Length: 332
Image (tube, rainbow, N blue to C red; front, side):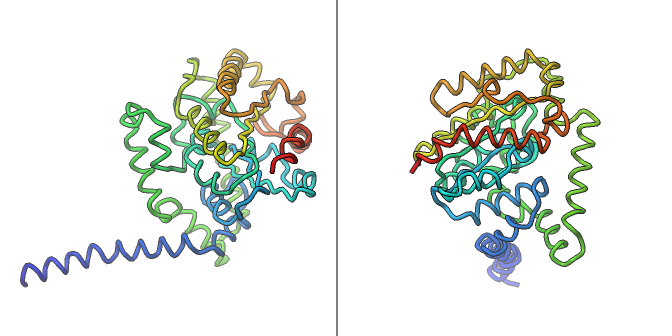
């Protein structure tokens, strides 16, 4: 076989699958009905990165959008139906872009996608662990190369080179991002699995993490060192706020309520976290609604040590609706 023929054969063997994968990626990315289905059908806290990408791709852009960002605390903390009824005259919608366990960095990486919704405002329910300066990268499931250059110093980027390499590869291809979720979605669509099965698996995982002391709150409380004020998570708040300011859309950061037991066990750390958050807000990056301004919430307002109960969710939702009424109704 001549060398030129061998070269073309090798190029075909290598390039063919790559081109086929790229074509499949484009087909899925531009399959609007698929993303609308994912956004509509996938339950919250199940395959969250895939579900959130579906929401981002299927939500029409416009000033009616007031996205709610955060982790599972935000998911349980707000009743979207109540908010949409409260602001029905303004035709506002409140898509929940929540990812279980996600730190603030996740949403800094999503800043361009959130800005693409052309929102009227963005509400971010932030918790102390979501701004931590250590031990959070395992819970970051989104990536944007351009944002990473702003959110990480060169030293930080080099020390976490594996995270950045994997993130960049996932950004390039929908199958690299959501392979397992796509497989599970297919099983549901073909009747081989139910969403309830996946919800049960996710609930068991959350309970296991709480019982073995490995959830974000427990590991944050055990870490006796103070978080650094300047870290990728805190920079993510500033980055997201800057992108939204370009659209005249305020970022409203709400300090999540804390169950009385963790509040007692970590009073000094929470005080320092509150001070750090206030310092960041004073730079003008975002509007802060601090925990001191929230309604007092006791044990009955929580379903566990972290998440709001139905009663707590109703109280927090009513408070936010009243507190933000002028801001949301006056914005054009």
